[in-house]
Length: 350
Image (cartoon, rainbow, N blue to C red; front, side, top):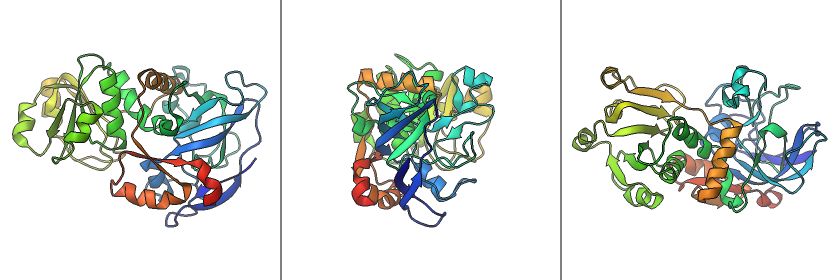
């Protein structure tokens, strides 16, 4: 299938129109016309080779909303015209213990990313959602609930599941005391989801000024992490803290805020963090953990939950030809809180 997208040809070139071929449908495949594509910081990191292993040319995008236009002979769960989503994975071994337990993100052989990953079948590079079409095996296609605004839903496929999964894993519910570090694309979803689960949510910010946004999202409090007295008063008052900060930073101000058996879960920074003392961990049986997106079943659960609760990210719609400017703005944190590309603009942009 001939299609068009926007690709980076190298680490130092901007995204530009790129024509390429999607594979012919296999029996288990679903062909999708992409309607909306979310913009994730991971897209920029991959295209600029901030992380090793980028396969060029690369078409980024792993927050995909579209409609089914064709199905393979063995497909049973989707039909032409269905509104569907595709997230960060398009394949896994399907045979290991983690895959059998619906944790494909922890596949023992490594999951196949939606872009810049070698296909398990023929080794060709996967290409993502900044494109007109995509072909994905049925097991990695998600149903979009009726009534959920598809123009805003795309970031749920990464930012949504990345924050939903630790909230579910650590059993957040009514009365849980949840802190969220960072109020960006991930952080604002963590607040919305935790509030919808019944938690008491506090946003941590280094400086004042986030109160209005935090309260509008449903948070009950804002704690200024640079205020030593306020942080000391908050000692042992959280069951779970979700850390969405995407750069190296110091965890030590936050671990004493956890109650006994509390956990700080990192979902933002991929790489080193500053050295931290083990004293608060040992003295309160506290823990520091990490979490990676979620499996397909959990992602579907998240979408259904958002459908019932009408939870959607706060988005700014852009045209495909605005993507390089959007990436520049994203690096300056000049977005509240997630860009979404209207893929109908691709024809005129290209």
